[in-house]
Length: 423
Ligand code: T4K
Image (tube, rainbow, N blue to C red; front, side, top):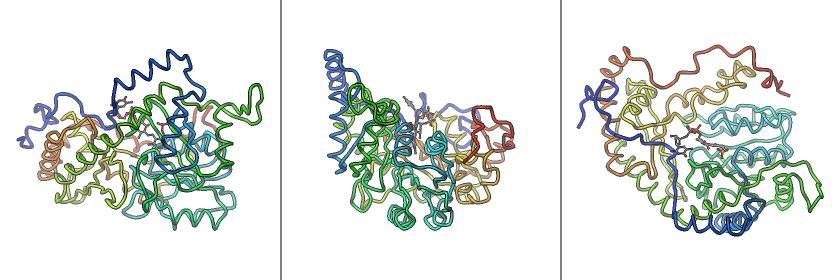
């Protein structure tokens, strides 16, 4: 058992020999995967809506009870295609408390992202603030089911219906989760999943758009394959968003082991909650046990006013111990380029996002950890918070390990390719 003087950040031996990663990939049954890959090679059908990609789509539709699933090469392209297929233009309301891809997908389509704050003490768009930010130029809302916890689906749906707006959900983190007993994937005009290596179901790189709207699904399929409506017949502007067969084979193999992945995540999450509950100034972010959850993101909220050590200091200390905790999603998209230059005053209307982005950290889970390693991580965090003042004072003499990017001035001279004036 360490004392705080033995912490690796002060020169002690790291608690873990090898780094423990957030987003350590789930692999599943290798034999089944290799069999499928051999089959792909034998068949010589490597991509372009092949049998594995069709099977992957079918399995997802069945699992979620959604009419259409269109598999994609990654979640970001899936967002871009969904934005385009929904006809979003002008302004779209979006949280800043998300991964940058949600926002870039809009800007990439030359749609202006309008950052809206999260609700106090929460992590999701505040529906009241969304309503207040609607202008004649607004065409849609993107809600994000952050860390697999569903956002305010009903309130956003009501607003979108009343105001004639499209509603898209970024469900990158929420595959296998439910809301009011209904699987995520069935809400809004469409929802987008990511199957990146770091997600609970992975296709190396991949994503999908799911929707119950036949016409929209048809449009998305065309857009995903260059607009081809038949051989040599292009009926629509499109791009290449297709999922290849090896990715689909990985996805199917992942799906077969999904319950095992979830069970491990759930057990890890419960161990973390046991180890980290009751520490003053710390709050594990809970899942709603009435719903289906993927338990894929273990998130901790830290109140520096109570713990004396800051969230960044805790992350530094953990990283020195080889626990590579992440600050998802610091510093908030509005503090990243090109958005901080477009909206230099946005911090003023995003106080809750600013506050929350400085308080949360995500801990390694899945196959990266064991119950023993979680207990050790819990002990380190307890120790650090228990000796918060002493550690804070001693850390003053050390340089931070994690980058501190917000203290710069907004970039006044953007590279030419970023000079897209918000329209
Ligand atoms: N919307 C939301 C809300 C999202 O969170 C994301 C993606 C998207 C949209 C877009 O979906 P995709 O286009 O990516 O399908 C990672 C992922 O690359 C990204 O997919 C994910 N969200 C985001 C939350 O996490 P980074 O920049 O943090 O990646 P990186 O390289 O730092 O890796 C993350 C952690 O995973 C590290 O601890 C290392 C570990 N790792 C990573 C890979 C690739 C592994 O252990 N093995 C691996 O193979 O973005």
